Length: 425
Ligand SMILES: [Zn+2]
Image 1 (tube, protein in one colour):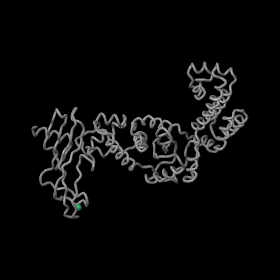
Image 2 (tube, rainbow, N blue to C red; image 1 turned 90 degrees about the vertical axis):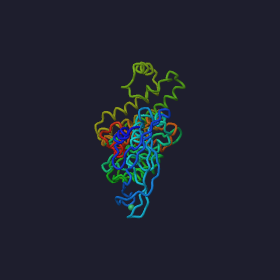
Image 3 (tube, rainbow, N blue to C red; image 1 turned 60 degrees about the vertical axis):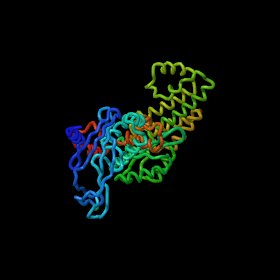
Image 4 (cartoon, rainbow, N blue to C red; image 1 turned 180 degrees about the vertical axis):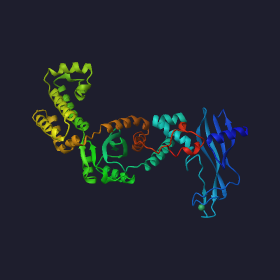
C-alpha cells in the first residue's frame, strides 16, 4: 500500500507522536486488515514505574490487538511495544500504548463497542457477531463495570429499596439494594440472608456513602432482611410497601382458590381474575366474575378482603387515617373463617409498624419492581453462562446508572479516538 493509506489510518486511529501507522496489509481472502503501528526511531518514553521522562528504549515486545472491523473485515493493530530501562529508578518496564489498556487483547474502541453492544443484546449474540469468545467478552465487561462502579459516589443516598431476585432455577438468589430516590441499583450480592445488609453497608462506605445518613428502607416481609436491618442499620425506618403486602394476601387468595377448585371446578382458569386489581380486568374477566360471584364462594370473599386492603392503601392519605381502617380490616379478616386469610392477617399484624410507615414515608418499591423487571429481562444476556456473578455484572450494567462506562465508538467526535475509550463521557 502507499504511504497515503498509512497516514489515513494514522489519522483515523487518532495516533500522535511518537506513534504512527507504518504499514498496512490487507488480505481479502483471509478477511483481515493488519495495521502495523510503530514509534519513531530514537523516541524516548516516560518510565511507567517512577514517571521519569525521556527514558531510552531497552527492547521491544511484539503484540497484537483486535480493533473495530474495517468494513466487513476484521482489523488488527500490531506493534512492537517498547520497554524502557529507567535511569532514575533502574527498572525495566513496558510502556503503555494509547490505544489499549494494559493486558487487553482488544483496542479501547473495540472494548467500548463490546460494552455498548452488551447493553443492547445477549453476550452470546455479541460473541457471535464479533467472532470473539464469550469468556473474553465477560472479562471486558467485568473490567469496565468494576472500574465504573469503583468511581460511583453514594454520598447522597438516604432511602433504600431492598429486594431479591432469583438468579437461576432452584434456590439461588441475589439481593438487590436500590437508591429509591435515584432509582438506581447500588449493590447486588449473592444470597438473601441478614448478612447481605452488612455487605451492603461496607460497600456503601467504600463509595463515599454514610450508613448513618440512611433514614428509610422499603423491603419485602422476609424475616432475614428485617433482621439484617435491625442488626446492622437499626436506626433505619422500615416500610413494608403495598406491593409486598398485596403480594402476600394474593398468595393466600390463590391458596383459597386452589382448595375450592376441588369442589367448584368452575374456578379453574380463574387464577388471574382474583390476583389482578379489578380495575385492570378484561371484558372476559368481568363476565367471568359476574358468573362466579353468584356462587357465594370463599374465593370471592377472600378476593373482596384483598381488594378492601388495596383500597386502604390507595385512599388513606396518612397514618392516622390508615390505622383504624387497617384495624377494621384486620378484625374482618380474623373473623372470616377462611384459614389462609386468617393466617396472612396475623402475619400482617406482626408487621404492623412497617405497614403503617408506608402511609408516612410514601415509600414504595414500585420503582424497584420496574428495575427488577429490567434485570429479569437482562437475564437473557447472561444466559448459557448464567453464573450469579455474571447476572450481578449485567444488573449493574442495565440498572446501576453507571456514569463511567466507555461511550459508544460511534458517538465519538474528533481524532483522539484511540484514547477516548477509557474516559467515559
Ligand atoms: Zn523509573
